[in-house]
Image (cartoon, rainbow, N blue to C red; front, top):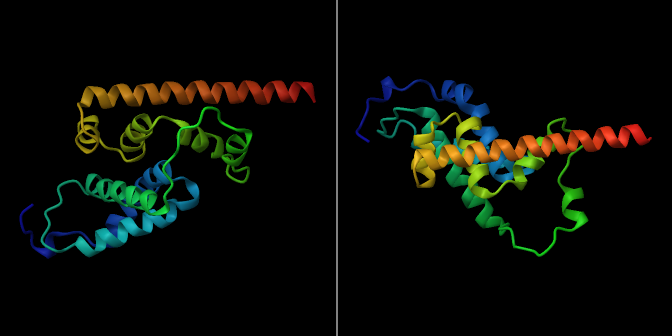
Length: 175
């Protein structure tokens, strides 16, 4: 990146307003609803520190998504929250995920259960608004592999939501 006059940059507040929601969605996909606000805040604090320091930013959303990704990884490492493989998923895990106060909780719970590559591709593509090429650049691999992982993730989410709907319908018809 080459130096750019500070006057050419839009106000940081407008960058936050324009891309804040997309970054928050991505943070939510990476770290969950409970901690997404913290990661979002860390993202924009880091962006503000770098903003106007002579960086030429061609795509603000891609720049912010990269920062958010790094902050989410830092956050997960600091919290020691790496998942450990288990033979069977207990009832306590499934019961702990949904948040009944949030109408989108079941979708976010399903997103959290996706394999990491699919979850990341969906987050970068659909929540962060990045192209498959940009997603592949961040995650490594090809644009075609990112497209495949995102398609697999969408198919899994559709199947999980369909199963949830059918289960709710069955429960409603028996009561």
